[in-house]
Amino acid sequence: MSKFFIWMIPVFFFLACAKTEKDSHQTEMGYDYFPVVVGQYRVYAVDSIIFNNSGAPDTLSGQIKETIVEKLGEGNSLKYRVLREFRASPNQAWQPNTVWWIVKEDNRIIQTEENLKFIKLVFPVKVNTDWDGNAFFDDRTIVKVGSENLEFFKEWDYQIKNIGAESVNGIAYDDVVTVEEANFETSIELRSSTAKYAKGIGLVERKQKILDTQCITCTGSWEEKAEKGVILSQILIDHN
Image (cartoon, rainbow, N blue to C red):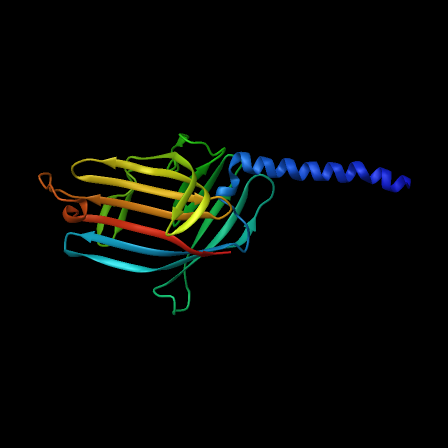
């Protein structure tokens, strides 16, 4: 055996161990639930019902495509640019909609949507972990939904509720983390938001009901008594 080959054995062994340790760390921390790679895209079917005081609710549907198009920075704090495109139906061309930003840190994922910054997920990913996902802005921030203004993020409190196999939109995923972003209800306000992230894919579903009413004596469902707000469904239908 040549001296060169003998010298290379520990090098190969070290590289193999380093890769195994890195992969193990990724799994233990839960980074795979929110993968961030340039060129990655996800397509969602989006359906919304928008309530307002001026008449019947408006129903809107379409598709959103999110593509990570650029990485900025080095080391443990990387910033990614996400191009979001919209189309009303599958036979239409994608139209640029907006740009979001993702910052990947050792212990959390920060996503900037429009002008609001959210802590979407924290690491390590464990059941019952909770955090202030809206820590970067006032939770009484007014958001315009349709023609109405409301405190969209009032009383939000993020918590990991479950990790395990789950079926979403008829597709079985081996490993999904469910994040309850909001679960607050009074006689006149409802704030409900849940996100599901599949390992190796990212967000596969988001469901939201953000509704207000002034009808204190109403006994019907929120869909019947809501005077302003939105019911939103976002379901993954394609990805690479």
